[in-house]
Image (cartoon, rainbow, N blue to C red; front, top):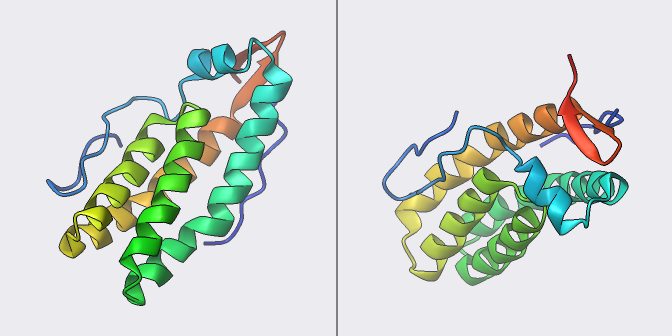
Length: 144
């Protein structure tokens, strides 16, 4: 997946029974993230940018691990990415990584490709949404 630069910070639902994804209207819970960052929009912005760079680098490894049959390693990687997504209050990405981890830990290999297929679309949606946020006075708002 090519890396997408995060612009300066100035659909939902499940696709399968195996990949249970949270139904969230927004790709990031802005108020929750700011609470986690003690109101610092600068910290929130840095965390989001860092997460995007990390997930763009590491998410493709999930497919490689599945293809190589390294299911335990896939579960560990999904667990790490789930924690990162949860830390920045990205509910749908958290849910996708959680489903990947659960399916891998339960050795339910048939559901893994469907969950992996959700990831690029949701990541693109997340990046586009975060790029449309304007971070002012500690409060992210959508640009007009």
